[in-house]
Image (cartoon, rainbow, N blue to C red; front, side, top):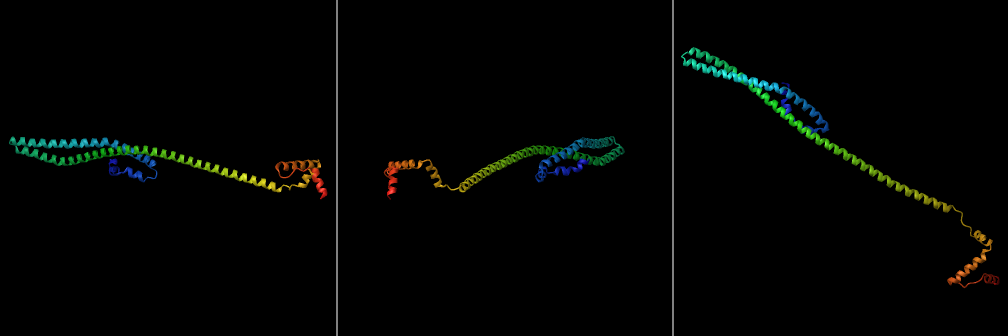
Length: 241
């Protein structure tokens, strides 16, 4: 009756409280299911013998009670026949049977109690196993959802990093443009200043000076800034000054 010695522990086990305290409910469910399956197998294995013992002990108790009634009836018949000595024999036998019957009745009650406990353990184990399997499916579903959520969050974090990288690229591009602009400015500053006299010398070298002056005077006259004066007149004025 090894399994019967664990009756109190099995019946007092609170599966939900055990899982609520577990750090890894999924792992705890797997372990508990294995233990409950082993217990249920033990219960089923011993139930037959326990129930057989209940039937045997009850049969013996009933048979003893029947013998008690039989000897009482025989004692009555003996008295009816006027034979008190025979009646005393039957009554003595009845008393012996009644004393034995008390023990048989006690054994039958114990066997009946064991059978009740076996059925209670069986029903409790089946109930716990079904409840755990239900919670196991829920927990596995929650774990799958949690993993999917974590994956989405990681992808979101990667997207944020990509966005940050693009912003950094824009910043680097602006910095590169600024460096290029500074380089162009430095190039302009480093250029040799223009020599206007030399430039004019190049112009007059080809005799283009007089033509340029005539063109300039004509433009001024057109704009009303000054009367058109020929180059010759300007030269004459310069000589007379």
